[in-house]
Amino acid sequence: MKQSYDIVIVGSGIGGLSTLLYLTESPIYKAGNLSIALIVKGALDETNTNWAQGGVAAVHALGDNFDKHIQDTMIAGAFMNNQKIVEKVIKAAPSVMMDLINWGTIFDKNEENDFDLAKEGGHSDARVWHKEDKTGEAIQAALISKLNDLQQVDVLEYGSLIAVNKVEETTFNLQVYDLAHSSFINLSCHKLVLATGGLGMLYEKTTNQKVATADGIFIAKQLGATIENISFIQFHPTGLFQNGNISFLISEALRGAGGILRNEKGEAFMANYDSRLDLAPRDIVSRAIHKEISKQHLNFVYLDVTNLTSSILNTHFPTIKAACKHRLGIDIEKEYIPVVPTQHYSCGGVKVDEYGETTVAGLFAIGEIASTGLHGANRLASNSLLEAISFAKFATTSLTKKIEVKRTSNHELILPTIKKIDKAAIQPIMSTYAGIVKSNLGLMEAKKSLLALKDAAIAESEFNIDHFEATGLLEVALMIIEDALCQKINKGVFYNVDLT
Ligand SMILES: Cc1cc2nc3c(=O)[nH]c(=O)nc-3n(C[C@H](O)[C@H](O)[C@H](O)COP(=O)(O)OP(=O)(O)OC[C@H]3O[C@@H](n4cnc5c(N)ncnc54)[C@H](O)[C@@H]3O)c2cc1C
Picture 1 (cartoon, rainbow, N blue to C red):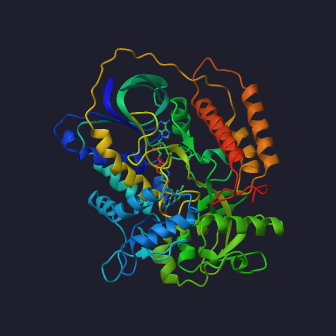
Picture 2: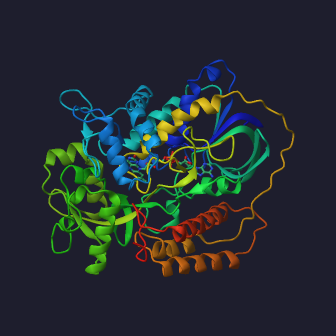
Picture 3: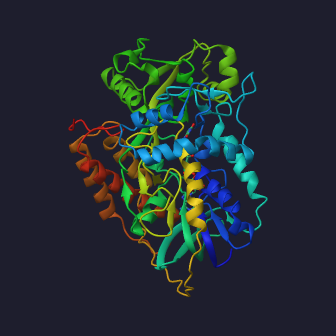
């Protein structure tokens, strides 16, 4: 690694890697005048992106149009979305799909040799581009394979960004913990892109990967960036229930193909909750399941896909079929799948403008970490991969704008105080009090318990990566509780029984 770069990108999911690839297509990079480093705290493919199943939403089918996709996005978001952003992203969608394809992503095609589009919950038309039921893996592999061609990019795997100070108007000083060598690396950059993903590790049941520890939100907040709507957390209706835990995501696309949710008595209960039945937006389906589970004191409900043909299950959902067989011994052609809602996605996050820049000049947030205004109070299925790549594209112009650099030799870093906090102690608090259904009393209880954890924790003299992550998680948990307590009405994913 060098000591200084023009741009440092943190994260190798679709947010980080597509930002990198768009930058490498810019004239300034091609002229050899842009130095870039990519820093990733795990292996390159240890991301939520790699696990995305359903796909990417973009208008393509005959009969579909931008207005319909815009309207679906606004309805799902309870009209809390920024309409200008919704329009911008949805109109950019077909072109970013071409970029993904040009970078090597292969999407499934139908018998007419056109793209095989799926219909998911909340979508009024089939517009989800997919690769079987493992679209994320296809995208992740394509993006990683492009890295081999890049000469001016330094890549550091197993390097966790742990501290950032802004020392001059144009310089960020970074400290990275090298997990492979248990040592520290100091470097600086003029523009910093946080593409660190979500916050799933705050919850006991989550579809997220272990890297989703909200580090970027914690760091951005310390730099003074505005965080917004952080209590708008989406719960996916159908996590695979296995021995009290969530082991796997059962994609919405199965309900899109005709799958039906049933309670213990075998009743198709969605008719009691919404006219769109099993394809209602995720917040509605998750709350309906939550109600069925509480009403009948169950641990889970069922997803019935026995009405789908063998051929559909084998061609479109081979991974899910194999996972159910392997993990639970269930043959989904004949048996119901036990499912339960699970933490899935952060709709809010670090506030950015239409070019992905945060309220701190030079600091960008791309992907799930960001609050762009696209999702409003709830994300429409398959709009998040789209959001990440679109904003990566929109950010390119701002990122490549010439910077009048004031060289600085100041590499001094003010490190955050890391406390010895047990990550596992945060999850039950958040799961109990800040889940699908909240209450004022519960939120106050959560705040009390989180503050007690913070007060009891002792500062550490030696750096410990687990405690760094736990310190950040605790701070982000408190942000969520504070944001939840400030909400005045229920909308989208946000539901507090004490509000209307
Ligand atoms: C099971 C599952 C299925 C999904 N299915 C879909 C779908 O079908 N369609 C859709 O649109 N969305 C889907 N989503 C959501 C979507 O996959 C994510 O929102 C998106 O992939 C996030 O991309 P990202 O680049 O922001 O973050 P990620 O892909 O999670 O990448 C985060 C990166 O940041 C790095 N990182 C984090 N902290 C640090 C640090 N301190 N220092 C260095 N590096 C760090 C990580 O190592 C990782 O490389 C799904 C999510 C899950 C979990």
